[in-house]
Length: 147
Image (cartoon, rainbow, N blue to C red; front, side, top):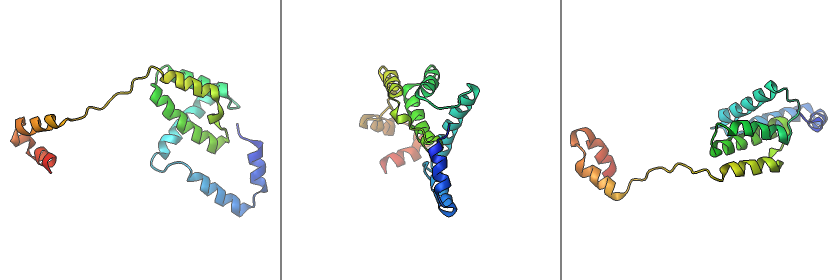
C-alpha cells in the first residue's frame, strides 16, 4: 500500500534530516482531533485487512464508503472522507481527493440530506421564561440571562 518513491526518498535523505521529517509528519494532524483522525484511519485499515486489500484504489475506497453509507448520514460520510483523506495522504501517500467517482458518490448521498436545525430562542421566549419560571428553582438562570 506504500509508495516506492517514498522509500527511495527516505533512503536518499540524510539520517538526521530523516528524523526531523518524521517528527514534522507526527504534527500534521490537528492536535485537538488527532484521536478522531487516527480512529477513522484505523477503522479503514482494519476493514482493508479483513477484505485482504493490498493496494488502495478508488474502487476500494468507493466500496468502503458504500458500505458505510448504508448506515451513516451524508454529513458523517463527508467527515470520514476528510479525515481519511488526510490520514491516507500522510501514512500511505495516497491522494483520495483525486477520486472523482468517490466525490460524485458523496455528493449524490448528500442530495436529499436535510441537516437537523438547532432551535433558537426568540426574545419573547426569554421574556416569557423570566416572567413565568419559578424564582426558587430558576433564579440563578434568570440572573445569567439578564447579565
